[in-house]
Amino acid sequence: MTDSLPFIVDARPDAVMAYRGAQPIHVAEFLGDVASLAARLPDHRHVINLCIDRYRFTVAFAAALMREQISLLLPNETSDLIEAVAADYPDLYCLTDSSFRHAAIPCVDYPDSVERPAMSADRLHFPETQPAALVFTSGSTGRPVPNLKKWGSLVRSARAAGDSFNVGNLAGAVLLATVPQQHMYGFESTVLLALQHGLAIHGGRPFFPADICAYLDELPRPRVLVTTPIHLRALVAEPGAVLPAVDFLLSAAAPLTPQLAIEAEARFHAPLYEIYGCSEAGQVASRRTTQTDEWRCFKDIALRQDDQGTWASGKVIAADVLLQDVIELRGGDCFLLHGRTKDMVNVAGKRNSLVHLTHHLNSIPGVRDGVFMMPEDDGEAVTRLIAFVVAPGLTADAIMSALRQRIDAAFLPRPLCLVDCLPRNATGKLPHAALTKLAAEFAGK
Image (cartoon, rainbow, N blue to C red):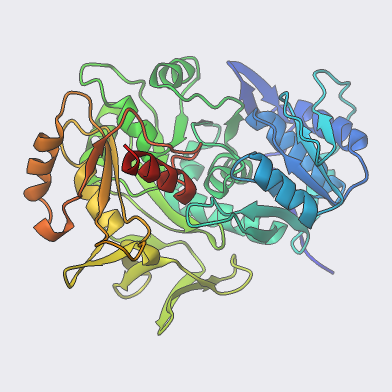
């Protein structure tokens, strides 16, 4: 008989499992919401869970599991992607708590108010082998690709991460996040991490620094902030601003600079950890950036290398995954990360990584955001690196001068383009298509 694993570890009826605003929601209320919603769901096999409210998303995910439905977690809701997944999954419907509508799929509204029938937490135990979610890649290197996640691997991955971070010491803490739960990082670190370690999920997703601080201020300690480098950079941008203390900081989506990690820890008075992973494998490793450059794999995950690259395997990974990064194994379960495989560039016989170059660009004082990219080779001219930079108060000449002190002259960008903002998605990533469009706009000027 297949073993089953609980949806929520701390299932005491009076335990606080979520907050909406400053209002706590107890496990008994959550179970009632799940039972009510599960009874309302249409009889389909696949559902796109587009609930913006993180609590409602969690209720919907649990209800879908009860109905043995697989939740599709998409990186965006563009018409092209919706039409593509609708063609691939003809029994698809969408569950939403917003005004989202699309002609290609039927949409069901999350109910504003429902009766909460009593339900035992035992109803929310699911077989390890039950298909739970299809998590799509971000599309930063092309069209988003689905990855099937079974309930057992999701639970074991969340438990391994939490054990690594010792979040058991923060039992009862409320977890606030700036990232969407539809992305693998947000799904694992803002929903599953909380459910499997007795933390409380916060329903909101603040974006602007003032809103993030206001949300934190109204929540009790201990509290956790799950975020990205782009949000951290915005939060520490005002040197004199007092940031609310938290008890734990977690970041992913792009590597942090040591300078930003040091400042974030000092300003929030909390340890900051980064997660390395991908949609295909899930979370793979972590590091405390202020203390080491090395990443350490989570429990039961191992890396090996061959002529194709670096492979991740383990109990929480359904099949061996070829990682799309240049990795230097350091013995045991540790490694260094040198950038994406596709990010390696060769200029004048010299090799470098776009991630490495971007790291140096963002380390320049006054640069709020920046990225290097290699445009498509049109075969008609020598292809030059381009850099897009958000740096109010700095000139292009000043930034170039600072770059000359940091990188080989062969990799200096030509041109360096000053912009108001970069076209990042909700998780802080830069989709390849958006960067290509930005480059085309500058080329046409």
